[in-house]
Amino acid sequence: MRRILVTGARGQVGSELTLALRERYGNNNVIAGDKRKPDEKLLKSCPFEVIDCTDIGAVKKLVKEYSVDTIYHLAAILSATAEAKPQLAWDVNINGLYNVLEIARESKCAVFSPSSIGAFGPTTPRDNTPQDTIQRPDTMYGVTKVAGELLCDYYHKRFGVDTRGVRWPGIISSETPPGGGTTDYAVEMFYAAVEQRKYTCFLKPGTYLDMMYIPDAIRAAIDLMEADHHRLKHRNAFNVTAMSFAPEDIADEIRKHIPGFVMDYEIDPVRQAIADSWPNKVDDSAAREEWGWSPDYDLETMVEDMIAKLKVKLRNNLLVGSRP
Ligand code: SER
Image (cartoon, rainbow, N blue to C red; front, side, top):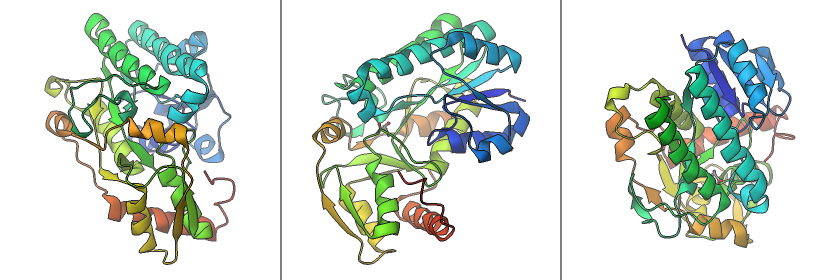
C-alpha cells in the first residue's frame, strides 16, 4: 500500500485528487499538504499538514514522519499569475520541484509532477502537437514547465527516481475553482451562465485550446502512477487531452442547457498572448499506447455534468464563496 503526500492539496486539482486517492488507498495513507489551512472536507478525511514546498526542511520532516513513498506534487503557480509574478513562479515551480525531487532521491519516493500544454510555445506545431517536438515557450510558466520536465527526467536517469508526469490541458471542475490560469475562462463561464446567464470572455473567439474534465484529469494522474514501468518509453511528460474547443463552442453547448445565455468579449492581451502560444490540439497517442490513456468525457457530457453539479450548488446556496 502506498503512503502518499499531495502538495497543493487545496488547489483545483489537489482538492479532488486527494479525496480520490483516499478512496483508493485509505484515508490515513494520503497526507494532504498545502500552504493554506485545510477546508472542512479535507480535514474530515485527515491527515492535513500546512506546508510550503519551498521549505525543504519542512517537506523532508513530513515525508519522514509519515513514511511517505509517493509524492503527487501539485503546488504550482499558473500561467497568468506567473506572468505577473515571474520571480515567485520560478521559486515555487522550480525550487519547490527541486526540493521534492531531492527528498524523493534521499527517501526513495516516486514523484508525480504535472506539466502542461504551457510547456509548448509559438514555434511548436499547433495542430496534433506531437509528443516529442519543439518546446520553446516564451512565458515564465512555460519556462518552468519545460525545465521541470527535464529535471524530472534527469532525476530518473541519474538517480533512479520514479518520476512521471502528464501535460495537463485546461481543467474544468465544479468543486474548487482554478486560480491565475489562462484556461480559467472555461470554468468562469459556467458559474456566470448558471448565476447570471451572461459572461464576458477574456479570450477571442476562435482561440482553440485542449481541455479536460476533472474526473479524467485525476484518473490520468493515478493511472500513470500505477502503470507498468516496463511499458513507459516516456516519463516527463505525456501529452493528454480530452477535447479541444474555442470560447464560442463551449458557450453554444452551455446554451443548450441554459437558453438565453449570452456571451460578449473583452480581450485580456496578456492571457490572449499566452493562449496564442499554446497548441490548438495535442496528439496524445503516446499516453494511449504506453499506459492505456483514454478520456471518458467529451464537450457534450462534460457540460451536462458541470451544469447539473453547479445547479445543485446554487440550490444549496453553495455557489457564493466558491465562485471563481
Ligand atoms: N490551466 C493552466 C493555465 O491556464 C495550463 O496548464 O495556466
